[in-house]
Length: 303
Ligand SMILES: NC(=O)C1=CN([C@@H]2O[C@H](COP(=O)(O)OP(=O)(O)OC[C@H]3O[C@@H](n4cnc5c(N)ncnc54)[C@H](O)[C@@H]3O)[C@@H](O)[C@H]2O)C=CC1
Ligand SMILES: O=C(O)C1=NCCCC1
Figure 1 (spheres, rainbow, N blue to C red):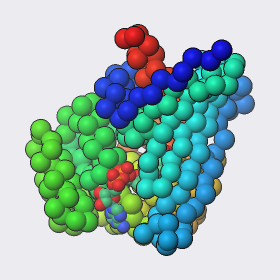
Figure 2: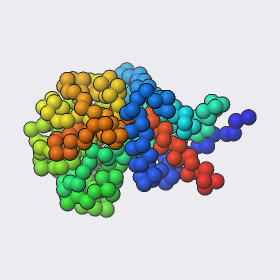
Figure 3: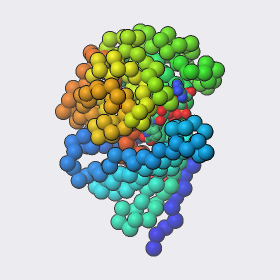
Figure 4: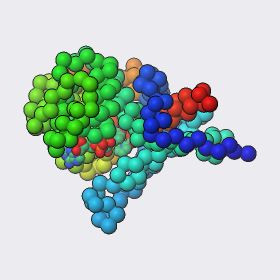
């Protein structure tokens, strides 16, 4: 007899999922994932159905239905995230033995927090630059400024008033920049978290030795970064299979992947912090799965 599923909204998920719990959990699962061949972690590449009919999507080509399953038998986790039109997201946890749904939770807070928590490539730095001012921009601002003391933070958005609104919501000082170039010149850490489909960040503007967290553009024909940057930087990804199948920045530039972040975490590849590095993240089902498990455990401990 299955119990009824727990249903958690965005506010609840946000409250229950803390970065202090999440970051070590994500590092551990990404390190294990990158060892491959382990029956401990089963995660196919995200399945994507593009929705490009104008009658369905006002912005042709922007919408898709994505399914991100993951199975971690040793941890009793069977999970899938569904990313639907306009990035509405739900995460479902299943009972791994009986198959019924044990929890349905809002996926937005999980996606925002787990994506921003891949911080192994970031080092002590002075200037942080964020391109974009949406959810991912905000979660990256929160984690990066929580973990590192920047002397200066800059933000750029294609609509300046949105960047200003983003800044008005924050406690610390942030400069709103009028152009990408102005925002990135001299920056040590650059987060690209936009919905751009053409390059907005050009290698010629990037300070040698800078670290780029390239979060946006998750389709094979979309770009945020130009060829110069993609080919000259040392390139890290979350999953080689996902990145080489779905990242336009990688496919269209022909850039070579140096290693997965998990391979840096588990010590098989170096971080090369002295060089210019790009971490191209596409997002992984295992990140959602361990996040959802943490949320459910916290909720269970309160009830
Ligand atoms: N790597 C990962 O795991 C994840 C990646 N993403 C991607 O990150 C990006 C941002 O996602 P959210 O913050 O959730 O979205 P959002 O809708 O909250 O914010 C999107 C931001 O991109 C800007 N933007 C949209 N079109 C643009 C364009 N053509 N040129 C420049 N800026 C543009 C908007 O002004 C806004 O600041 C998206 O590309 C999304 O697909 C989202 C979730 C997870
Ligand atoms: O990992 C995710 O979740 C997503 N990645 C790319 C864009 C949509 C959501």
